[in-house]
Image 1 (cartoon, chains in turn cyan, blue):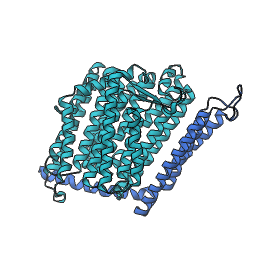
Image 2: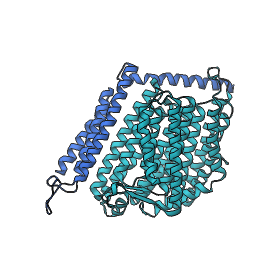
Image 3: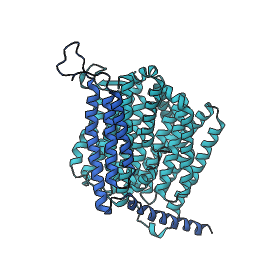
Image 4: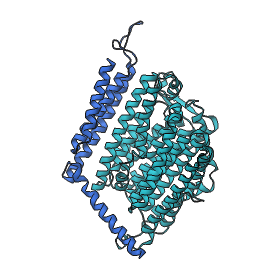
Length: 461
Length: 128
């Protein structure tokens, strides 16, 4: 019941709100309230899943195997809660600052519906449908602002990601051809019997599609233009919520459905992740612009996630889930903080910067710690050194931004301080990041459970 | 038959990729549309069985696999919506920039670089 509600609520209200004038305060607050309600429903669902194990619904009352399966396990609900939390923060931020186009609240709700669907579906094609729902909403969101930069960003974002979506669709067709099913659980069961050449081709297609979404090196080329061009709230949504599709997809399809292919490519994944990490960090140091630094930092940070997935095992996957969550929170905080000025904001930004660099007590420290553990488990000193270098570079570029943004008396940047509620909101997000670092037990335990559920090889319990 | 489908999908994808690399924005959209059609052909080609249409089936009839057709139908509708959105976006870009050439859109990038250089200059002055 709660499961169905969590899927339907944002979707139905989103459809209604798109038709209303979102610039009106009450419509904006209604969207925020719906997001909060969705978050509450998902929190209850998470509690149930943690207590009683995964839940499953077959749509339309069909027998399993005929109808489309919706499936909530620990991994799915963690990502759903995280994404809706990010959307809630970004939407509240924009409503407080004043929404400028009428469709904004509706689009954010549709995006929330699409994302929840992606994380809670148990069917590969259904995944594609929700994926397109979420992506279409985010294409439209990228144009938010309507200036030249936003339009250019939206054009690049839409063209590149549509290509990624069709590559995903080609792989879905391939999956059906070689396994004769689209339910994730059955695909995972039948995959070992499939011709290895065909299987690796299909797996590579999925990998490319998700890497484009995530902005991994060398599929990152669209990312700096888009993150720099779009408005802060939209950049927060793209990097904190939409990028989760990529991380979740890699986790769900990699260890969940193509474990043999993943093992085959593990070394390549670690190398790609390391390349992404170094490339992102070095370019972030080299670029001066705040938005661009954060964009290249995003490329570097997803490198950590890929390294963790490449390492694999319970330790690697726990690190991957944990780091995705921490990274999404960091990016949301940073993008929201660079958009505003005044007291509290510099402090909030500093918390985010420390978290990206992995300095305690911010949440990033816990993520980095798990990654180091993964590096030690594979017994690779080179990997650990690389992780340290990456963290050191992130400390350098984050404080470069901090210095430019908050210390220099730039005459062109003498904006008046932003309103108090806006600053309080950013401070709240900063407190969440701090709290996750000071009391990491729940997050660690949940990540661990998610990794175990994936490794059990049964997407359906 | 599979070979024909595979060739059709390959040719469509190839043409789409070629057009995607053109400078004109409308050709880029055309390229994406061709690639989406290549995905549709692949879905239909992935059917598990071939035969008559699965309507009013008697036991023992050989029917074609209905699932890929349902998938293709869904994917076509989604593809139509996304391409319509992309066309609307291109229209907006042409109205605002008064050009459909990718090169001229990149002129904004150069201004951005110049602004960055000014900021680096300020850094150096601060350091010395």
